[in-house]
Amino acid sequence: MVFFGHRSGRETGVVLFVAGATFGSMQDRAHARSSQPSHLRLIIEMIAIYVVAPLGAYALVYEVGVPLLGVLGPVFMAFVLVLSLDRTFRWRDLFFTPVVRAELSSIASLFVVLGSVIVGIAYFLHPAQFFGFPRREPSLWLAVMALYPLVSVTAQEIMFRVLFAHRYLKLFRGNFIFAIVVNAVLFAYSHLIFESWVTIFVSFAGGLIFAYRYFTYRSFWGVCLEHALYGNLIFTVGLGRYFFTGVPFG
Image (cartoon, rainbow, N blue to C red; front, side, top):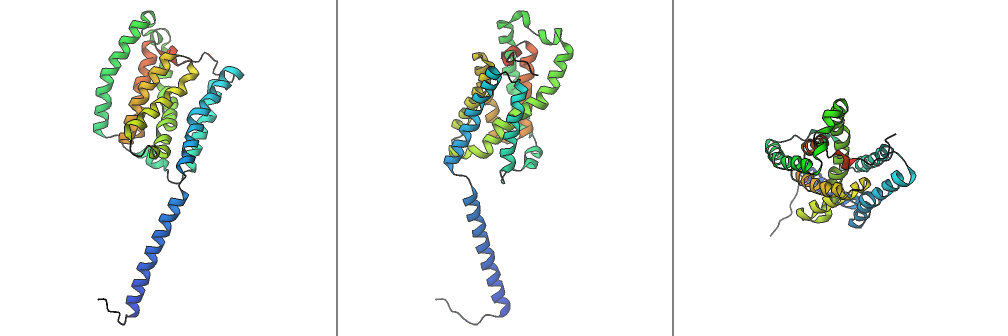
């Protein structure tokens, strides 16, 4: 049985404050739910970004003759705009999330194994070109080793891991493996611009590794480090030909 008696002004004020705070919190949660895009909208957005856009880039490069960098620059800025307009995304959180020791250890261990496989494949497929890039063009090789991680890798990871995880991972309802596979497929598909099945296969394998890494640790710099290790190795041992369109860069 509850008895309602006389409340002092102070008690009444406390009750009104708690009630108001509770109501305000409920309103905030309701507003947050209403501002979240629907799953249908996210699916359409994901298809437009990861399926339609690569086809458009392919057409611009090969049919119109637009330099590859002239296409990739605006595309990257569009990805950045989508993230920047998302009120739940914070660039500061992305750039300041540390790389933990367990992640570094896992990256190093896997690279020792898979890196050795890549070196062996490069020698088997193109023995005459094995380590030919640093031997014949040492200055250009050094430039690629520095610029590829800083420019290409960071852009790719923002487009394919950061945006995907932040906006579309919820579509998979906790199915972690399926999300990784879909991300890898889309990443490989984006490399159709290089017109090589070897490139598609390598990109799919890399996509599996990078998606797992980022979805597990959410460390931007960790996945960039891993991506740069494999990319720079591929260019160094003579497999860079599979990641060049042949279209002038401007």
